[in-house]
Image (cartoon, rainbow, N blue to C red; front, side):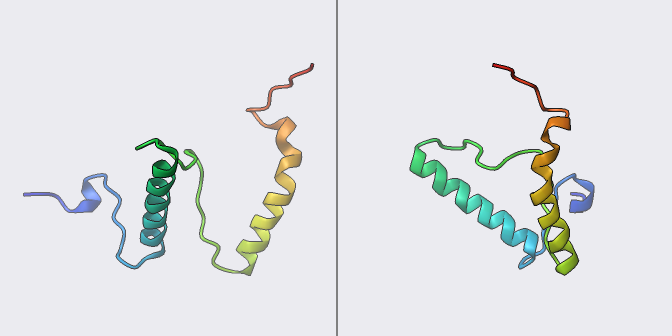
Length: 85
């Protein structure tokens, strides 16, 4: 007998949820972009990121602050490599 989805390692999305909408949107956009550029099944979306749904004004302000101040942190980031010409 098959196990319930929570035990299979497969993420379940409720129909009409925000997660379901975003997944459908990303799938549709990926298909369209790959059709336009002739690259079937090539990834479109960045991997290793954290998606967050902005649910209130405090979330929005925190994220705006991050976007505005984060570029100033680049030189201290682990991925930064100084390239002197």
